[in-house]
Image 1 (cartoon, rainbow, N blue to C red):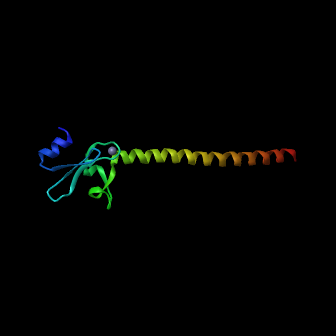
Image 2: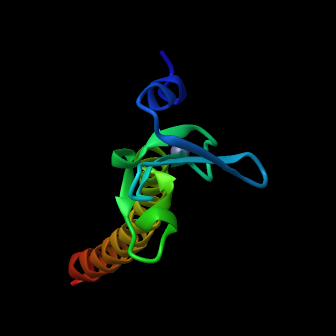
Image 3: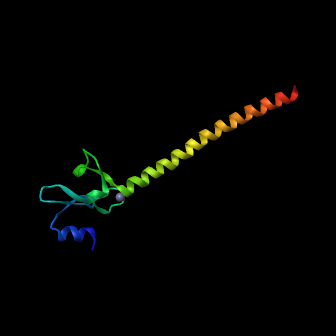
Length: 106
Ligand SMILES: [Zn+2]
C-alpha cells in the first residue's frame, strides 16, 4: 500500500496545490504528509525537519533530500579543506627544503 492509499484509508484529507504539490491534513488541519519539493515524493511529516515558518511547520525538503544536500556540501567543503591543507603542506615543505639546503651548505 502506498503512503497515499494509507492516508486515504485513515481518512485524512487529501489536498492539492498547483504544480503537483499534494498534502494531507488531519481533522485539526495539521499537515500529516506532503510532497517534497525536491524529489516530488509524498512523504509523512515525520520525514521532514521542523521549520517554524515552513508549510505545515515543516521544511520544504524531506530528510533524505536534506541529507543528500548536506553530504554534497560536506564533500565540496572537504575538497576545499584538502586543497587548503595541501597548499600549506607544500609551502611548509619547500620552506623545510630550503632550510635543509642552507644547512648543507654550511
Ligand atoms: Zn525529498
